[in-house]
Amino acid sequence: MARENPIYFTEEAKEYFLNLLSSNSFPEPFLRIGMNGGTCGGSFVLGFDTKTDFDDEFEVEGIPLVIDKRQLLFVMGTEVVFEARANGFYLHKPSKS
Image (cartoon, rainbow, N blue to C red):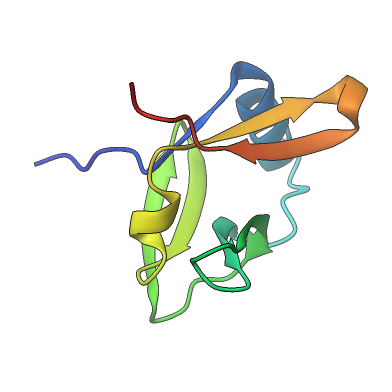
């Protein structure tokens, strides 16, 4: 049974990370998405990291990803957006309609 992707990438974000991977410029084996400052009122974090015993591992559109098992519920459905004009990334969790 296939697992649902926990997060989504805009086309620009996906291309950015796939280019890093193909150029061997990915600084660590995984992209990490999580929460900083607790899950209530905390902020999203995005960075490169290694896997720990507390992580679930995913591959989303060819991008190796880890998420702390304790934070998975809180980041599920998050969209990683890259905007060059805004100088980088932001994470967006669309509200369910």
